[in-house]
Image (tube, rainbow, N blue to C red; front, side, top):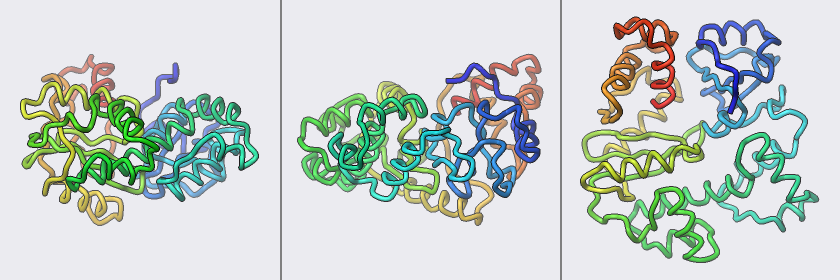
Length: 307
């Protein structure tokens, strides 16, 4: 969490181009074309504006699936964090333990403090979430819970059920088999995403490691009449293809039907967001004026954060 209110993206992109030291440690940029996040003072060649996502902390960048840059070291003087994230990315299905850290010559308590300080989560928690994603993928094919547990590398059914329940708010066996909403994992260059959709629309697309995901899933499960289950629909496959095309630079816009929920005000903000042409940006103030509420800049910012 940061107490520094980020300026609009135009201001931050200008600071990135200028390598403005006033923003060093106060704002970070995630580059969608590389999956890397940097300080704004990074000496690397500057990305295009439409490939930039700005965040207030390294934890937000990592939660969005970006990896730390090896040139500007946005995690500070803690190379072990970068080293372990690289190892995790190379083998996301590995079942890590404190003994593994000791075998690498690392002190588990030092690793725990470093990750909590830099990313807000422990290394073992991040590794466990990525393994859980493997289990979710297995269940998408109607596999039994025991198969998903084995594929995810959990030591026991109870450990898998507990991790699953923390994510979706209930044990895997209690999910409705004929659920209207289906949750599936989609891989991408910026990290694994969880997509919730029915046959006709996308309800949620969120980074798997984002802290707010569990609450969002529980709310969907509560509000949906047909319940929430694990599985894939044709819309999931269509979304996965379009995301791959987008990150490859071959798709400027999406045509996936959306069912975003939210308050009437937030839906107005989100409707305005999707009118912004590819490669262009708008400040919160400009969006507030566009929806006819020029004094609602802060509320627009909050709606954008909940997008």
